Image (cartoon, rainbow, N blue to C red; front, side, top):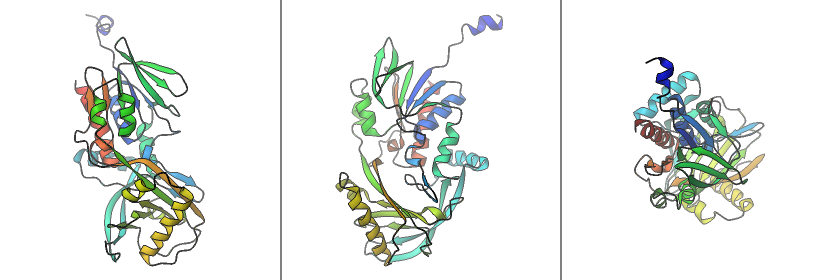
Amino acid sequence: MNASASSRHVRPAPNVAIIGAGMAGISCARALHERGWRVRVFDKARGVGGRMSTRRLTPWHFDHGAPAFEAQDPLFRQALGRWAREGFVRPWHARLAKVDAEGDIQEAEDENLWVGIPRMSALVRSLASGLEIEYEQRITALVRQQEQWYLDTAEGERRGPYDIVVSAIPAEQAEALLRGTSELAERVATQSLVPCFALLLGYEGSLDLEWDGVKYQAHPLLSRAYRNSAKPLRPAEEAWVLYANAAWSAEHEESNPERLGPLLLESFAASLRLQLPTPAYLSLHRWRFSQATQALGPSCLFDYEQNLGVCGDWCLGSGVESAFLSGSAMAQQLVSD
């Protein structure tokens, strides 16, 4: 049989729509793309990254979502080695103080973390290179017609058809999108993600602190704080990101942000027993869906009858590693079937 006749019997690669351009969605899209699948990613934001985004405001940079990440899983560590060789990540040996439940400051300890280079969002951008991505597209509904999927947008447009749709967005948003289309909605509905406030602080001079960050144990407001300017290849101007704990963030989720920012700053200074100067820049950001209260368990979910998949860091816990592993598992499940 000649090549042209043989090619007529080759099954075309599936056409996949992925909703969400964070680490989970992009890692899934990258893996499928490298296997020759047709993939298009949709995201409501203006760029990739999700909670790995970076706010740049001269002269400061703030990795205000995921400040850094650890690497435990062998698959993720293997990927990190490749990204490090390509220059997209670097290790960060951060010296972190600990404030215990009694409010005492413990001896600082070194932690081996990883960060994107030159900012956290750069890692996801590198993985997204060459992918077909549509930004500022909020998907509001999934429509099934003749065993194909169509995506309705907030602007009233319909995209498709697609053979498979993968949701790589927070659980609450995924459940709303899948409701009435798949039994996956019931599984996803069991998950909940708590909010988190991040306070961005920019200073014109050094704070003269000997630590790169602070971890809090049972603090009424704060969970952690990181000096963004201490990370590799960041601008030298003093920049900090303070993270409120889950309980306080949930309690004040709808409160006036102009009141919450100063409260967090005051609590930060008091915890260190310092009189801090007035920051030149202060901004409060709310991550409405930040961390899972508990992991779903499976690394991803797939409805074989409807050709619908779900992935996200909340399947395995929270964080960059969980998001990568979930998205990679989703891709592996699809290509293995």
